[in-house]
Image (tube, rainbow, N blue to C red):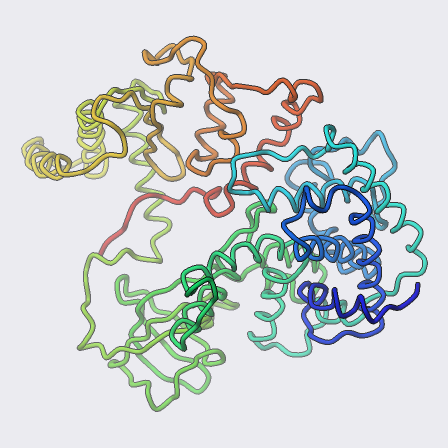
Length: 539
């Protein structure tokens, strides 16, 4: 391959975006030049103006494709981890495609991999626009043709392409046991690796929107801290569209179980942000107490940003984000600040960040109350605010008795009077006389859905179903306001009447979507896929 300095200048920055280093060597130069050959394919076609939002978008896409090829050649396992997770979840290597009818080699480049990479990139690009991308590109022959050209290019270069040892070492080698080292690798996986950067770059642009002045990002020192903290939170708490899992779970699969750091990575917790009273200083750790719940925490000093002289036992309150690391020891992650305990407003109504089991137990009791109030069903159809409030009061009365079997009817009546007074002041998200669907999500609690979907639910218990009314299939799958539990319920019980485009039937897109429903629900819901209990445990 002829090395062109011109193309290094044009594509160098785009290429480095997918890597954990900031200098270009001979290996990078090879893949940058490979990227330019893919870019030239697009430029010779009619696709550049139709599919890309300017030249920068096109450059990003061709580097993303070349990074896949580099990943296969260098055995850095980013795409291999995707396949392995998909196989564990669904029993096959890739979504959408039937690989039994064609040759597929896990340690080589594959045409169907490139099909998926096209689908993934453009699906992320339009992830908020309520439309599904066809993974087969049946109606766009030019896309199928260019996929074949890219595959042939990769095949012709397979024996010549260099292994990126620098990238290999960064991903698999751990020279020390420091939390910062692990966090840097997690940051690369979550934010820079080619499969995840596609989504992160979109999210980061959204993060920066609030710091824009006259169209440009302007950061003060305070804004820099805030943006930095959002990025740290993203590493530990935000799910990728790929399977709706955290970066640490993807990285653990990439490393594989035999890697000495696999278990440490796998066991890292989500980041929890709260107020903690410093109780004791030790040589290499702090003993802190979560103020609302009184839970004691062992906090390593390794990542603590505060100088030791500012930390005073039984006086200093740390407002920080922490991550459980290993052996019951937690690490500080992100920015934070200090308070003096006497100055802190210790509000007993602060929701505890360490009450997951109690929240799940509460949801289970709420479910029992809902079922008792609704004749054993998880779904109820009502019209208007007054009907909903009466149903809610009925559920609450039953729940109160389940939660406290010893409570008297008199005490329940007194509580209900207070509850009713409170309910009358609540603004509900639907019109006073509008038919609604009330669904009990066994993971999070009560959900409400408005008339436009209620009228399409052909349930014998639904008096508001209108024969012939249909609901748009793409909207149901892509819009995040519908929980995965609700979608599964109405599909599995065959009570939703869907509107299907004629094109869908022509190439079995409907079957493809239904067969890959969970994969798509994870993709379009990300964090919301994992429905959290909608209750607060207060102290």
